[in-house]
Length: 133
Image (cartoon, rainbow, N blue to C red; front, side, top):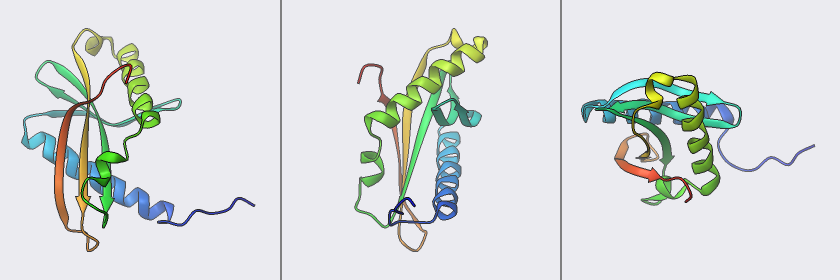
């Protein structure tokens, strides 16, 4: 039997992630972005949000952390996660040729929360992931 790592139960993690994605989407919309997709997944690739920023298609990785030290959400975007978002962007462009001709970029939105659930900070990082990094 596989050893279980300590941490939140999967349903609790999913609920936290879903909440963070809603906060991130609202944050981006308040900045003038238009959300055109959520939870885009294909094969081993994923993008939490797909948005339009003017003529640019933006793939957004959302990281939500509760009760940790400031900056922990941003630090959780590692090379493996970045590669998955880049792959999702490539697949999306293939499946949506109307967007493939537009500039694309990958952003991150981090949501930091207090242990009681209060949102402490939302940070939007443009061009958070670039090919070859």
